[in-house]
Image 1 (cartoon, one colour):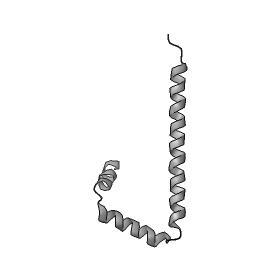
Image 2: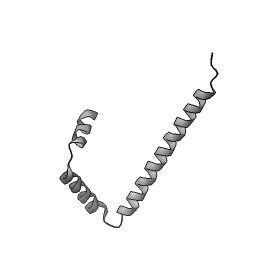
Image 3: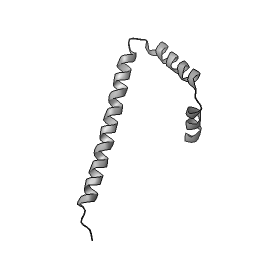
Image 4: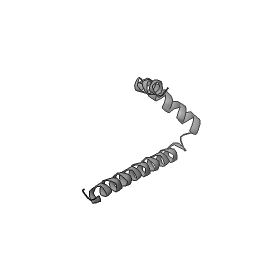
Length: 68
């Protein structure tokens, strides 16, 4: 199932992406798009920060672990 979805997304070209963007523009309207983009950007930034913090904690715990 996941492979078919990823295969579909991998085969998308310029016209398909433009069609999707046009449908989003029609659905949400031009005034809502900047707000949606800001929210998406914040979500991505928070996700990256959380993954970075988790990675740093794991690396720190590995460094602090005493060798046997």
